[in-house]
Image 1 (spheres, one colour):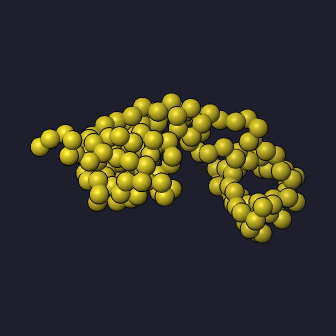
Image 2 (tube, rainbow, N blue to C red):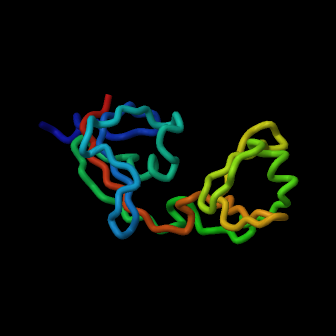
Length: 151
């Protein structure tokens, strides 16, 4: 079969693939390799843009692993995204009466009407410290992909 006829991944390609996102130590974060492959269309927000960028130009049948430093993944951790909130603000902007535990992901109403979430790091009677960085910010990741089909 001639390489000219082999489809390659484009910015709007519809693909069937197996993929695995793992920590730099090789611990799976998400993987389809043990199940049915995923079918998705690029440019629709189904994969993070930096993962889609890895796929562009790859021919059908490719099985490859990418090592992504934080700058090419979810970015470095931003210390400004550690925020201390009063219990009053916490109670007003989250689910009232919730018992919060260190490590909980708490969702808040944003002033714009959307929602955002932070991980609870510390809490006492008066304040709570939240980390609004993406949970994978600051981490190097491995992205393994096996492109089964490109439509």
